[in-house]
Image (tube, rainbow, N blue to C red; front, side, top):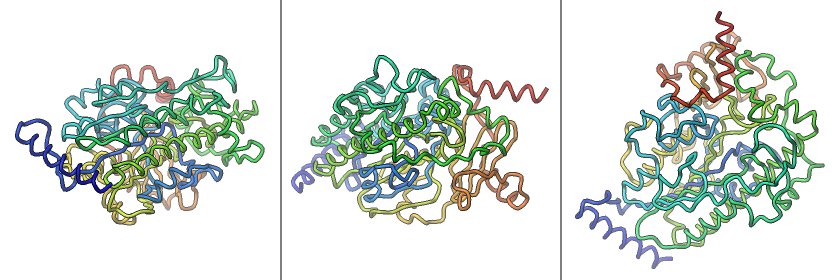
Length: 484
């Protein structure tokens, strides 16, 4: 191990000297060089041991990474949809800045991002070798890395007929499939990462490892279901009249029968326990894949010189507020796991200050000694890595379509919709967001303080962006009717 470190130092030194001499990629600061390992998990909410979102979640490997570094227990995505969330995080810009609000278009078609380097491209410009496998971006990953190992099968494999039900989007299925864990794409992605992390590199690396589960279809082999027997399963707590204090616009905005099943159907069909079991099984499976990657890093030559970031792109409902999947501005829709483990920052830390996925980009620049980019809209989380309880004036801001925003502070969540309706929740006394306090006189000053963080300007929806999004379009039509 010591010889490997000496070798790397010599290589990095002469690489920096050579690069500066020939005017190639920017020289790396040898005294601060650190590799980056970025682990993405698709659609993982707070159902992990370290976040406690479900008492029966089994995630020993995610939990051990949290024990190695800093867990941001109040972290949130910028949009509860894959494409805008990832585009925001990987460019350092809010959706309301870029106009990328929904599943299309890709970030390469946003005029506001013309000439903007993505996270791996920025590191490549600064002398890093960039490589990835699986899902880091929302497609076209190969164009952003020096080396792309492929999707390894993505969301597959899938049975010829649905296991759980005939309802909803083609990807919506859950149950035990296929027969062997080795058939799963995420297992193959973990193997790819394991092999790469055993290698020496001639320069620092930026490696992305993007896992697909627990994204639907929630299909994993039987061995992962055996960890979560259905007869002992605890279902999420759901209040029957939870949405009675919400506006029709707020309810309509996430009414997505064409995309995901309605909770009324899941419950009446008897599928709710099976679906929850499938999600927990999928989480346990992907946690095992994370463990393989962490094991490879720890026994390889880069264990002491690598920053590890683990995140999910958005939350996920499993019946809470009568909803399934993503696309909401409530806590279950925006809260995500975010863990950063970096050499020299201690271990086992936990911060309850609001953090954004947008903050990952500037944080990695600071942790690796690269110059900050003043055009980015996030904040470096390094001050919270040093002191998790430090004074912090930056709430987490999420949005779902133009005019729909959530502002999350340490204690409160404020939501304002395009029709002017509002929600306000006190998480100290109401962690499930069952009581909307927006009409209560005693919280109006707090609401004003949160409302001050809403953007004064927002980008127009890009062509091809919202026109195909039925939920947003339906809500807009309903809003137009009420205005007439």
